[in-house]
Image 1 (cartoon, rainbow, N blue to C red):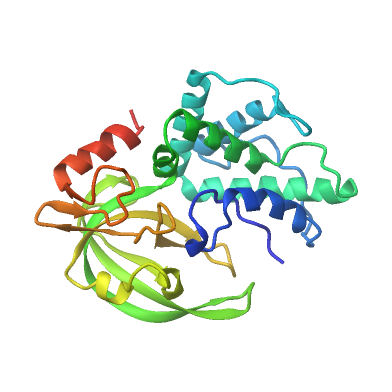
Image 2: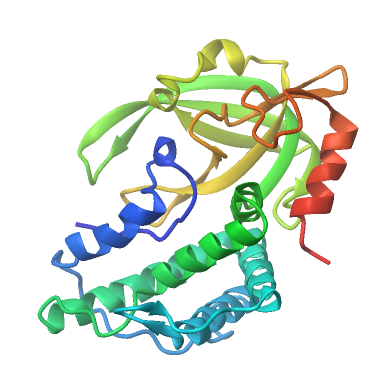
Length: 293
């Protein structure tokens, strides 16, 4: 069985376990066989990006204040939590795949230590530190803030084509209906390092993700323009990644239509209303959730 990927926020519609269950599942799956895994060396810029290095070295510093029985032994200042939030934002925005790869190697090493010690942990699992700190940041700012800094990309564009296909999950041994949307990008709010205007992106969703939300075939129609939060979904069979819609909460549609310079947010996720001025909403996102400067 393959190792658990450490992806904290995208919900079960994206096949990612919620944060709390992730912690428990680390113990449940710890007995799974891994191949020749050892404790990773300290993060090095010779292998990983500066953002990955900076983030995981910061996680290690925070872990020094964590006790397995009592939790954090230190109350972190607003400045410390703000600094952590910025580093988390930067690694997710500039190297989301490197973040996943190194985080997975840390989890694998921790699992091997757990097995070697008779299933008794000697230190906290690194992903747990990130989850707990993001919970503190959520209380300091808002749930929307924690979610939005987790999203690697915000792009706008028109759907120019769509196709129905199938995806086979080689871990679960099931085949599922998948839809590919082809989006011509006309604005990039977050993600200029990866995309440019006029790019055509393939963005996927699994049809069953919308079982209780809306009819995606009539919502995501060719010619319609959307604001898309996006992330790299990890395929089960190999270390491959594909762009997928990021769901801000369980009722989120994944993409928000822009019509007549208005953006429609049916679940009113931000508490600003369901029908907003697109220029004003765009400025709201840039002001509150873009931490590049």
